[in-house]
Image 1 (cartoon, one colour):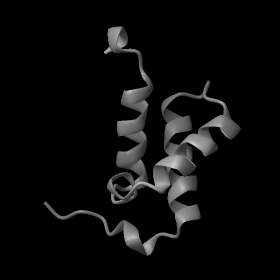
Image 2: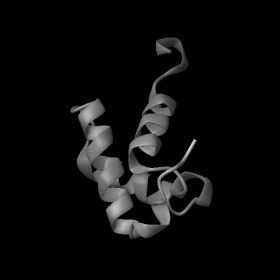
Image 3: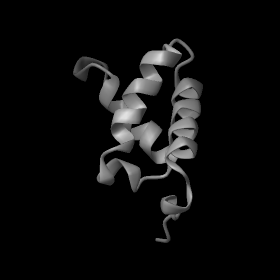
Image 4: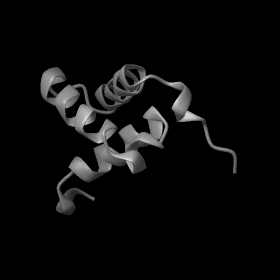
Length: 69
């Protein structure tokens, strides 16, 4: 399965795209705390390799309490 080349995105584009998708998934998330969280993820190569959409979906799932899954 072909994957999107996320290396063509700047870090800021990746962060903005991931934050935008996460806020679409849950409008109650705080913007500043969310940007800080996603900026930390951007520094991790395994997260940065994901598309912003995939990273947001994965991160959103990991933010949910285990009993909500």
